Image 1 (cartoon, rainbow, N blue to C red):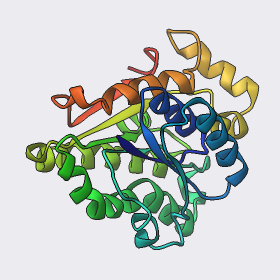
Image 2 (image 1 turned 180 degrees about the vertical axis):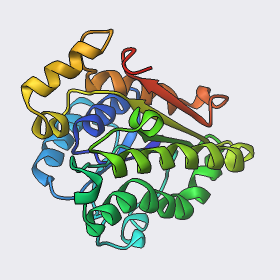
Image 3 (image 1 turned 45 degrees about the vertical axis):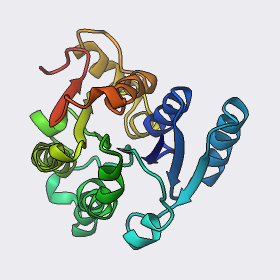
Length: 240
C-alpha cells in the first residue's frame, strides 16, 4: 500500500507518516524547503521498516506545476493533505498575494492534484483521501479570516467530492483539529496566548500531532470505506 503525505516535513505530516509506516504503508514524503527534516525522517523509517519504500518528493505548491508532482507518483492507495500555513492578522491588512497563497495551498492545488491522481486511487477500489482541516472552518476566527474561509472550503469540497467518487471505492474525509501543539502555533503565538487558549479547552490541553495521526491512520485503513464525506472535529471540547 502506498500513501502520498503532503506536508511530510510539518509536525502533523511527520506524525502521520510515522504512524502510517508503522501500519505497513510505503510513503511518498512531500516537502518544499525542509529537506533536512525529510532526510532525517526517511532515514528513521528505512531503518525501522526496511521492506517498505520511502520516497522523498520536493514540490513547491506555489510555483511548481502539478505535473511535476504527479509524474513522480506510481502506485497509490491514499493521499493525506497535511500541508498548510496561516497569516495571523486583521483581514484589512492581509495582502492579495497572501490570500492567493492560502487559497492555492489549502484548496486549489489539492483539487488539481486529485484530478490527476483519481485514476490511480480508483484503480485500487479502496482509495483514501484525508485532509487536515481546522475547527475554524466551522466556527471562524478573527485575525484568521482567510484561513478560516479556505478550511471551510476544504470541508465543502470533501462533502461534494465524497459523493462523486464513493462508487469508485474512494473515501474523502477531513480531520479538523482545534489547537494543536505544533511549531506553526508555538511560533505564531506567545506562551501566554497558548495558555489562554488552553484555559478555554475542557480537556485542559492542546492536542498532540500523534493524536491527529492516529485518526488519520484509521481513515486511510482499507476497512474504513463506509466512513466518507465527514469532517471530524478533534478539539478536546473547545468552542463546540
